[in-house]
Length: 190
Image 1: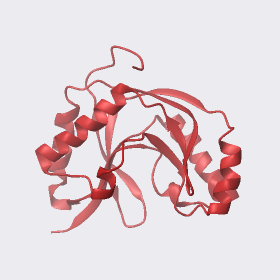
Image 2 (image 1 turned 180 degrees about the horizontal axis):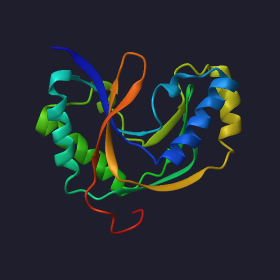
Image 3 (image 1 turned 45 degrees about the vertical axis):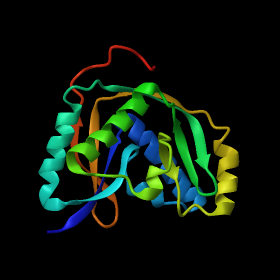
Image 4 (image 1 turned 90 degrees about the vertical axis):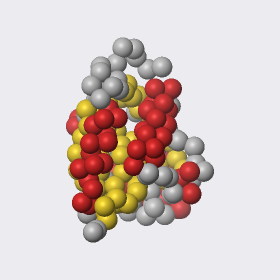
């Protein structure tokens, strides 16, 4: 039996993914930071965990059950943020709907499948974001890039209609499957 690494996220629509991928390419070209290009643009809800490949259908069924009675999630991207000294990201507005979804998902995965956060992630508060540069961004390039990006305007709104399960192939993260939210939102950002 073999294990792979997985994580669960919200992905923006393709037009926003394309824009974010252009930003990631800009970081690769101008600041020699290519690490963020190893995954599609996303908002992580459940950080990476190991799971038996043979048991992926059980995991996928669990996600389908979780989303079955859930509303789609309104998401607003607004400007840029940073986790100094190496990470620059698109800021995701922290709404109660998003916070509740993330908490409910983690509680559900632990209760249903025994998936727990690693000790480092467990001690971190959920800070929704969409990474455009990290790890391989040098401290010097971070300072230069952040002086520009903290001033740069960015504004997008979208409705996340599904949870996405991603799998690591040894080099990059790829979409494994999607689980649709069944209910359309009854309100805007809360």
